[in-house]
Image (cartoon, rainbow, N blue to C red; front, side):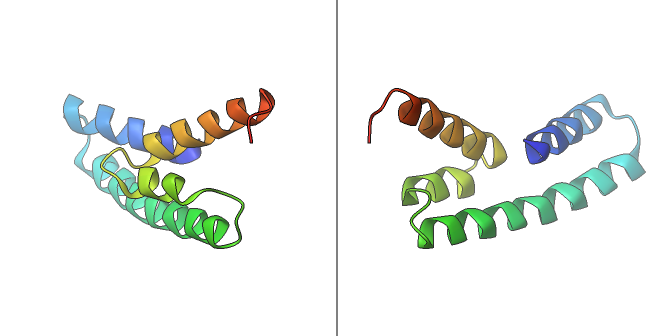
Length: 83
């Protein structure tokens, strides 16, 4: 969820043309955060905590939004009792 907030802030700053230094800082933060998110999801997939489709959603162009949507989908599915 944090990565989605960083990504959203980056988009707002970039599209709004506010501050180049803020855009650069948010860009680097998003980049490293996305790499860390991908590594953590990959580790979860290897340990059979997540399905491999979640990693595909994470590394897709949707990035953190795809990962967050995938995790929410899995949580709702688990709550309904679907294995």
